[in-house]
Image 1 (tube, rainbow, N blue to C red):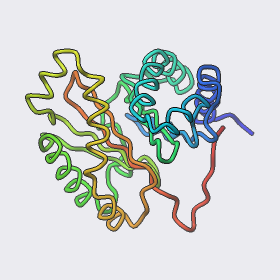
Image 2: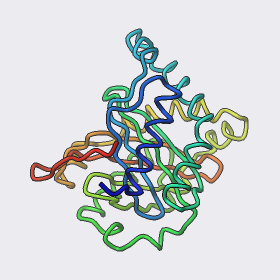
Image 3: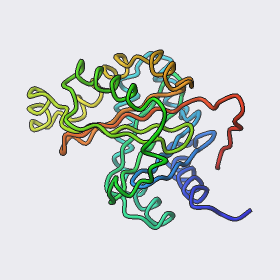
Image 4: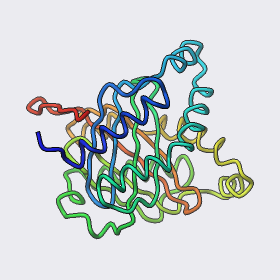
Length: 237
């Protein structure tokens, strides 16, 4: 089988995680649509992490993952750049401890205008934006600018700009980014009306991931949708 860019990224990321966590993801799904690349990790939990979650110590799990990911981020950027022939601007990540899944999210050094209309236009976009604005305003403030695109039939990415309130900006400038990130992850996910989004998208939401670029006052929400009945799920490992 001819090696694709997606399979190349998947293979290299899988090896990186096995080498550093002692166990790699069960499956890896790579989606590419400029200016974004998402890497969805299924059933990814190291033996020591299982103990932390068994002890109901999710905060320690998140802190430990974040520390290791900060070390791995430059290598992840290098893998994506070399395999896809692109310049990676930033890497984001988040985890679903409930489902044992995770996402790596690369924002490329390119413009959203390069994304084709097929990705930017999708059914229920207006309703999706309304819900994203609603829960964002409840958690902090309504986005000054909101964009979204459907990378494929299962991956919906939204980008929010100018969303932090003054207290958050003060915490960021005082060096409390890690604590703020951990708190905001839990808060934002709890505010999302998944049932409403599923009703307008006509698809069940499998996972929700969030992360932020605190320096540039930008936040991302990534929805992983379950495959429709007539779709075959394929993994690239």
